[in-house]
Image 1 (tube, each protein chain N blue to C red):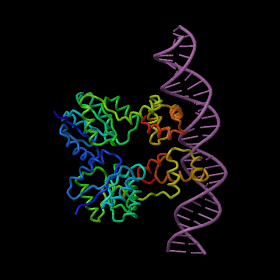
Image 2: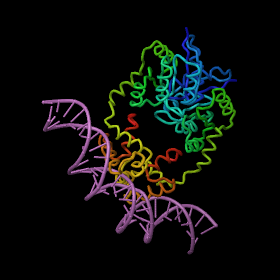
Image 3: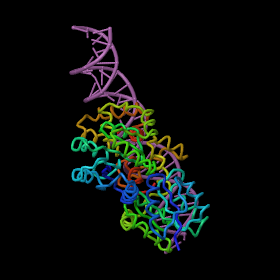
Image 4: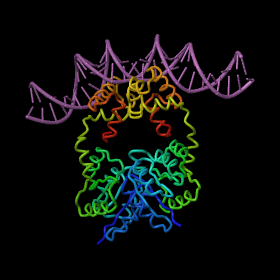
Length: 202
Length: 202
DNA sequence: GTTCGCGACTGACATTTGTCATGTGGAGTG
DNA sequence: CACTCCACATGACAAATGTCAGTCGCGAAC
């Protein structure tokens, strides 16, 4: 009884290589491949795989978004997320989206195959190191608005512009920015943006 | 007569998968693998490969830095850079460092194998799309100091700190930042940093 | 060999920020 | 009901930042 897989990653080289390696395992069979979020969704609908192995960063819709859609459309399909940059916040979001596994690309193919089986069996698997990071990073201390404003500040826009886009008074924006920076222990809002990004809080 | 390869990528999964795929080609043989810049250098010294396939982003020293060192230490070893995010400026830097090939990870393994042979034969290969981007992005309009200061400003440090680290007066720093922002068409230095990053000018 | 353009560099000034004190009203909890 | 937390707002002051006008030295152009 083999496990039917969907493989999604925008990097052809990696997807192909991965497909080849996983195909070597007798009990794993790749039924579909995709290079973007929407494509992954379409492929999943068409082939109803047992396990979907998704890259976190893909054009169109990221792995977590795809996982959310899959959850409702194909409840029988388990999702395993693979990523290069393991930001703590992403792991949390992924878990909330019903993802069953979360691993960095630093694991070996052998190990990945085992994890696919684990996930297929209905168990969860989260990389221990990422889990430790996520726990030590904790939850985001930012309130909804703070995070919202911080996000608008992400591309270096001046306060006035942020205020307009958020339909807030400039003073309020400054306050949110200031309190967000304080909570994150950052010197200024730009450093705060960086930190929040690193921790996956934006 | 087979081509002896060094494979360097910090993502074990990808490196392993790639190794397996390239090993399928009769004329390619992987003599060494590395997971970081320094390790790649050490491996190259120990095994003197014909072609070094390097990931652009690696811990320790990036692909371009490794290529530079390799150039002088092992002139017979051709360098091929593989990358996920093809920023125009990186291509330029890579070429200046004597790299013979530059491809995105979106190519297929089959294609990569061909490119490895091309590079081994002494020819150059640059992905056409990346080349087009690099040409359309053009050269950096920033002067040496402007780029230098902009880089120091990258993590959101206040002007005073940048001034110290660059051994400049705060006023001068502000001017460089200001002129850099103007040249890049940015509202402020933070947006400028983002733009310069995107174009690979920092 | 003077003129011109340009990059390195500086200080002064106006604007944009970060910070703080303070206030209102609503939602949730004990 | 009192208490707390959050969203939202204002005004004022200090610090950081952006902008400008201008100096100096150097290599290229004429």
